[in-house]
Length: 113
View 1: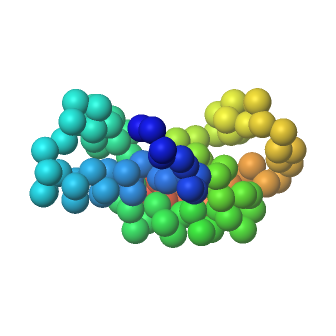
View 2: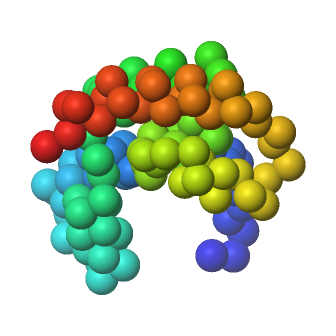
């Protein structure tokens, strides 16, 4: 790890992590940590990557990218869940914005497996 530094830091949705690890595992053997991560994202990714990307684009019209990714991963179901997600953030979200986000999520929630 000597001499390595972070060049870029961007949130990535669970569905993208799942795709990256699955593609990597086709050519290489996954480490213990990578296997744990793949198990986790397989269990908790709610919708496919294509749908996740569409959802994030829609959410970015209302909120920032990093918050859109988190919401797409967790798919909160009601206002109390939304408030919990933003409890420690300094992002003042209006009730109307949260309701708008929940409406957007409901379109994608119907497509869950």
